[in-house]
Image (cartoon, rainbow, N blue to C red; front, side, top):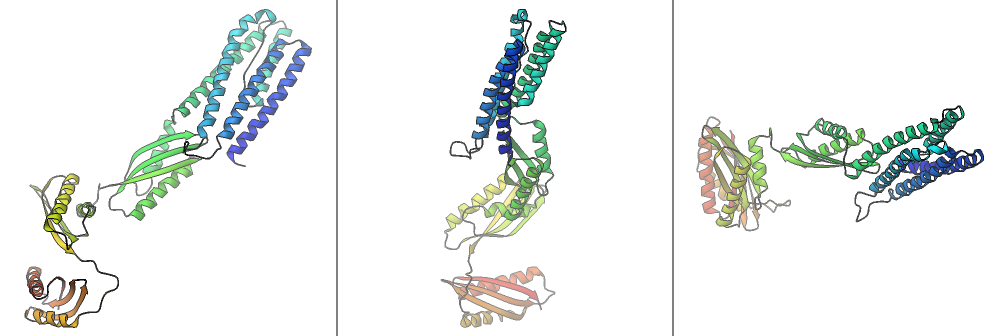
Length: 416
């Protein structure tokens, strides 16, 4: 049986017991000529009304969410409790002030109950004790019993009003909020807890949590961390409905990774590589290679470069200079065309003009639309400096491009 079904069944039972208590109290009160029992039986009618209100509210609260109530109808139950608490408070105060007017009739004891028959039984016990005191000669006993019961019910109803009013205003215990904050901060992968918002609707507790994750985390990692946060909260707080939002933070993330990530998000950027950064007394010096559409004009490409620089400067402090090297981007299809052997022979002939190249490895050429994609493996003397090797490779690329138009060349040097 669900919690909501248990609640409505309890209210039905309470309503039946209250009605039964009314019949018994009224009958005994009439035959014994006891004003205490008669008036207490009358208040049982009020109890039945309040219990009926709570029962209707509990049933309506189970209605599923709709377009106008996206969080469900749980607040209806709170409103029912609030209404019941107000009725209890009014009746309690009424009976407290009424005791003076009833003094000449040997007093009375009245109480209001909206929970269940147990409180009715308690009220009846107080009334019987008051009658017992009168029988023994303590004529103020009935009045005192009514006063004690009225004060008790007033305190109880005020407490209930306060609780339901907090719920209606979406207030939540501070201790529960701190509990959620502790759970979130202790979850592996969470860099910081940005905010925790909680509210109650009926039996459910809704929590919206915003967390910061490392900017170096992949989407899959971020999703796993947020799922762990949600699971940990639900395991600690019953009937909780949790929504987790995550955003990147660059705290403790390498600067080169941060620069690459920022540049990659700029519209028009096809790829980022060779990101380098160095610092001096004058500030940071950053350089990176950015690939854009090969058919893009220089003016368009330069606007992208300016946007990249602007975003990096906004995100990184103390930058002295940023160098952005623009390159044409060539997308390689999954299905590559047949190699052009005549082009390979032409390339091999050019490379042989350089004695520093000890061995020509594999030369792979592919024609992609109207361009040639050329990949070359070359062996050099292992004692040559990388600067000298880079100069030779640049010369070879220059000569090949002069002979083969629209060529995109990648030379991989390795020691012989």
